[in-house]
Length: 119
View 1: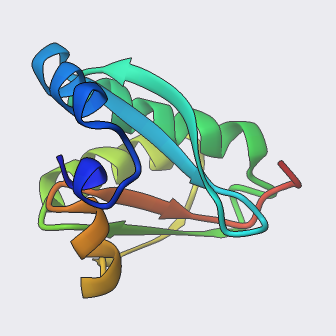
View 2: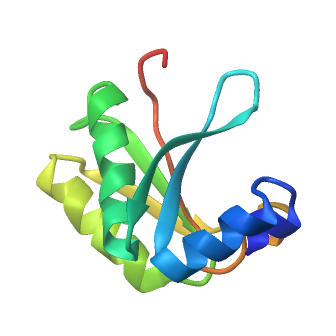
View 3: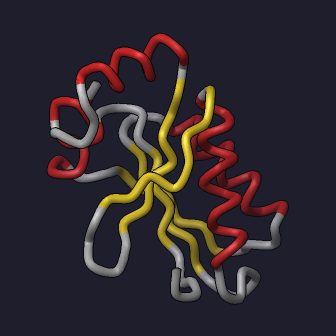
């Protein structure tokens, strides 16, 4: 619903997505555009989707740092952090999403930041 309020999705898409439990896995490209990488059903699948995209593009996972930002959902961050540790990531930093991004994405947002190859 926060993506609808921010004009990112239509009202019909927001209602259908909410009813069906569809979660977008989003990406910000090099020009700052928000792009839907995939749509999955369920919260756990959306978190796994984030990890999948990191795994596909991250450079030097073992020596790199991955930042996880969240909107009041620390348990989900811990789930993602455990998945990252399974991939060999050693330096994981968890923090809160700021008020500007939080106003657009709402509570429950999880974001990953890492150094990766061009997309």
